[in-house]
Length: 184
Image (cartoon, rainbow, N blue to C red; front, side, top):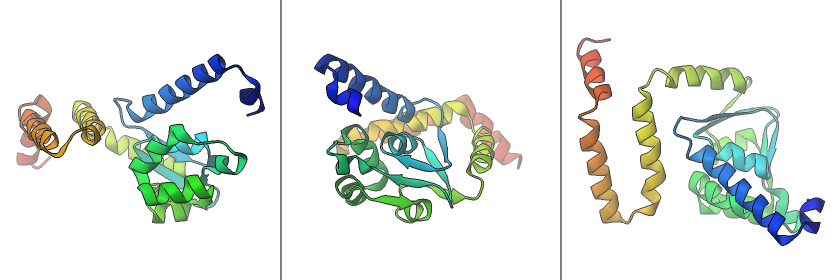
């Protein structure tokens, strides 16, 4: 932080741009991203975890929060990710208050998806389970979920109808229907 404070505007601008692209690349990754949090995920680390599609955290050691406010730093780059994941009320609590919360509390308020005694093992099991789903279908769903917030209600309705219609003509859907009918 000290180096950032003394860096020229151009250098800080470059750093902001790279960090912003980093968070966006995780959240918009075409493949599902599962975060296994094993300890404190604070500030940018919390933002990184929240950019994942699914978050499993160690029940005993994981902590979440944005303590930057206590140091006069504005956690702007993670604010949108936080609001999308947990809502504006939780975002206010964490960003303005700088509160650090435990994994069980983070799960209770919807900030994360699950807690575990072995988050990495559970994340790997979940990844193996998700890997059974058709990749193109998961990728389409991720694109859809990323696009929805930018649409007004009429555009959203049209877009979702188009996605549903398109999905009915994919090889993955045909294979899935055949599998279902054959009880596989």
